[in-house]
View (tube, rainbow, N blue to C red):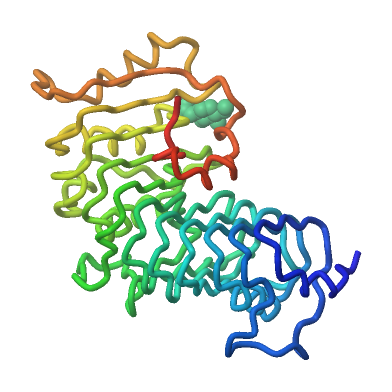
Length: 330
Ligand SMILES: *[C@@H]1O[C@H](CO)[C@@H](O)[C@H](O)[C@H]1NC(C)=O
């Protein structure tokens, strides 16, 4: 259904949710220079919309007061290149939407960027560029193997071990990662991803099942990846969901338990179908902590009761600033 273009003249709107529309062509409309379509709009959610990159840019440019942006479901038939520019933007969420690239160009107040169910075309990456976002505190779920991360002007070099000081996002305190531990190439990128966020205090890992495994990476891989500052010195809380007990997951956890000096809380949630009981998950996790572990860390173990792969991320929780960590598992 074509969305009536008259809507663009509703200057008083403060919240707008649109779903299942074809967005009007804005190419003939004036842009920039104070030509705001929605001068008062603070919250915008687009669900399963047919919209071009150009019209999306128009919408964001024309909404200078926007604080919360959510995009869910497939948008457009072509890939969308999302450019985030907004002096007031505080939270952006993209769920199960087919975007080609996401560039945080200039968002001085952006605190939260949530991504889930990122979809890409066969054999290509989704480019995620973090430019000016000095307040970005919560970020995730990043998916090694799906997202190509770019910070400032440098693409994160996964092959090498060099870590460029300028290619870091030091403001990020809560990081979510979605990892296919069965895919060797994805796991090989993990150290580089982690090194981009040296000050992370809370790490949320969501493990994804894969049909075939392409090799395992052992503890030696992690030891040779060099020191990871966040794990060594900043991580206080870690959650690991959909744990299957797979050898690559196990070496990652062993590494964290051996090196994280101030880890206080770890939550490990066994995947449905891989464990028959909680004691079985406990026995498995016991094999991963160092012998005579003198750590003051408490480890909470449970078993997943939700759908396989975890619950869908809640758009509402993401926008709720009183919920300090919407990734948290309860
Ligand atoms: C976990 O369960 C899935 C099936 O639900 C299976 O394919 C996979 O191999 C299991 N993983 C391990 C490590 O046992």
